[in-house]
Each structure stands twice: as C-alpha cells, then as structure tokens.
Length: 416
Image 1 (cartoon, rainbow, N blue to C red):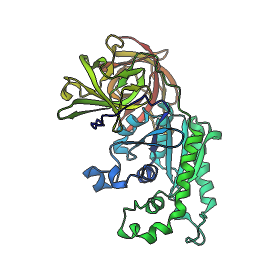
Image 2 (cartoon, rainbow, N blue to C red):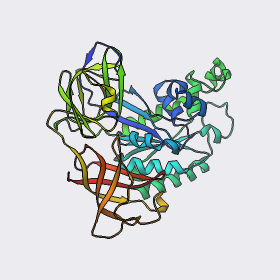
Image 3 (cartoon, one colour):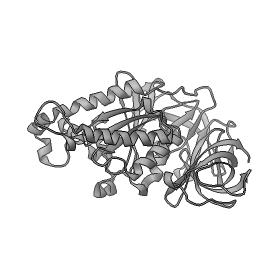
Image 4 (spheres, one colour):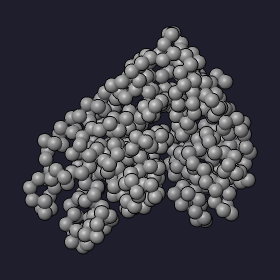
C-alpha cells in the first residue's frame, strides 16, 4: 500500500468498510469487479487463485461515490480459506451478501452470515446474482424480466435465515444482479474473446442498471458507524510487508484513535515490545498525514524487521495498552443446526480464538456457574491464550475447531 506518492491528504472520516461475502462460486469477485471497474483477473491474481478459479486471499481496494468512500474487501468463500474470511469480517462495517439466485442458500452462505453478524456487522444488502440465468421472455429486450417466483423463493429463505441469526429483516435490501453480464457491458469480459466485442458490450448494457441501483442502495442504506477517534490509537496488524529502501509496512483497519506521521509508537505482541517511529502513512496508494479509526491504512515503520513482528501484533502509542493472555468472556456456543458442535465440553478444551485479526489457541480454564459448556447456550468462560496479545474489553471474537465456527464471544474482563 505504500506507493511513494508524495501528496499528503487529510483524514478520511466518511469511509465505510465493506465486504462481499457468500458461498464459493456465487460471484463475489465478479460483483466486486463491477463496483470497482477492476478486471476479475486483477483481483484473483495469485497463481493458485487463477488455477482453481476461487478467491483465497481477501482482496482490498477503495472507490468513491457521491456520498462517501468505500474500503472494499472481497472475501474468500471456499471453506478451506474461512480463516481469511474471518479476518475480513472482523474489520468491516457492512456486508454485501452475494447469493447465486439459481442455487439459493448454500453452506458457506450460512456460515458467512453468522460470522459477519457475530463479529459486529449488522448492516447488509443481499445481491441476488446470476439473474441472467433466470431471465424470461425476449433476452434482447432492453428491459430485464426474470422469473419472479424463483426470486421470491430465494428471498424467503434468506430472510428466514437472517431473522434467525438476528438481523433486522425490515431493513434488508435485495438487488437482482448479473455481475457477469455487467462486466461484459463494461468491457471487462474475461471468459472469451466474444465477451469483449462491441456487439457483446452493447447487448449487455441493460445489466448496468442494477450496478447503479446497488451503489444507490449502499449509499442510502448503510450508515458509517461513529468512530472512536478520542481514545489512545490502536491498530491490530493484519499484514506486514517489507519495501526495499523504505522499511517495514504494517496494514489494517485502525480500531481506535488517530496515528500521525512521525509519531513515536510501539509494536506489541507475543510478549515483545518494539519501539519505532511512523515515517509514512498511506491508504490505497494515497499519502495521508494521519491514520484515523475506521480507515484501512498502511504505516511505514523505522528500523523494524518484518521477521520480528510476524504473528499477532498491534501498533500502539507507548505505555497505552497491555498484552494479555487470560480473560473472561461471555460466549454463545453454536449448536449443530448452526454449524457448531453437537457435544458439550469441559475445562481443558482448546479451540482456536479469532480476536479481530489475531489467531491464537485458547484453553478453557474455567466454566463459571456450570461443570460443562453445552452447544446452544450462553456460557461464562475464562480463556487462556498460548501467547499474550494486545486486547481490550468488549472485543468480539470467534471460536473455531475442526473447520467449524463453534462460538462467538465478547471479552468482559481482562485478567493477566
């Protein structure tokens, strides 16, 4: 993200962190392509992504409408890469749930919805993708006519699931979409040379109207949360890079406060504390003088080696935060029907804890008020991490084991 652009900009406040989520092959990346104007193969660009035709790493970009800036993450849908989706969901304010209208609800649809909700994203728009496959009548007509019965059936299933998870379904918007056809209309066709001909571009222009509708719904439905810019600044580091001649760069969404260029800071995690200085701040190749809460930023750090901060680290001001390995939390355990466990567990159970972008093994050292913790119940647990990390009260987190998300929790007490 550090590009060398020397123009310093002011703080971005009207920024909303958004993600496309949903089952593998529902068309999330193609939807992202229509919103950003970025060709599909520039989003899924790693060799394995190109070979397998799936998203593995969460792609991040930004774009602006007349109302605000969007920092957009295209989340992986394949269950093999759900860890990357959890990291993505922990940093967003709202979601675009992409559903293949010909298939309806699928397994990862359910898991992504639950993760997004329990990690704090309560704003949602549902994109019913591949509606060109249920188009009826004369397809050369400038008007889009689709099988409304199929749409209504899928809508009903989605609304039922959203209601059971906890979303306010009265506020849920749906947009009927064909990301593939819209890409062709934009000249971004990628499947065959025929998709890039003037005739194909002209024939698919009607599918640009849903793109405009979706952007309008995003502007009118989503609300940028109030940002905590008054607290001590905190960035839970998502990724780390080394740029030759520039230094080490750390990225992520700033959780709290405001960092400034030339600030003395510390990188903390896994028992380490490293003093350094912020030399540059950027966001999506634009230089800024500050990095504030709610913004996806990149910070260039002086005299820090990438190898020293590979793991679960945070960027903070000196003497403002502490590292903890033990905390008490209120946890809801998903039952088998919610994709969770079908058996209770006792003290000594060791799930994986996903605390924002941190991923640490946790041991249950106490179950308060009970001898066992049962799926489908709210439980009061004390958890001990295998290594200390920067934490704070009321932090939401997920628990996973064996490829399943088995619970969602909130820290209520930091112990040690």
